[in-house]
Image (cartoon, rainbow, N blue to C red; front, top):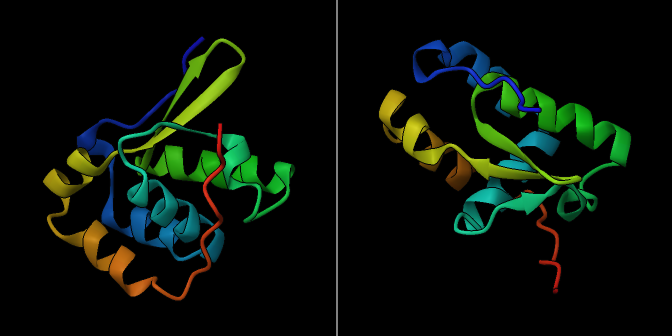
Length: 111
């Protein structure tokens, strides 16, 4: 099973900005950006929202083309599509993340 992700040409600026306008989704993106070399599982974002709400927010990020979700066994691993977003909208992601410094970040999970 694989999840649908928009191609780079299908990622639209209005949709990306609308999705990033939510504080929870913005916090998730900021956390992913700080840990870009490590795919994250859904449980690492539970400080931001309940499990049900988190599933909704992660789906919105994936559907907008901001994140990639890979199914590995029973886990879903989330990564930021930084290279593709930087290619499509140069500097946008860095600007949005820099402006979000007041969003609280969860402590990284150990193990």
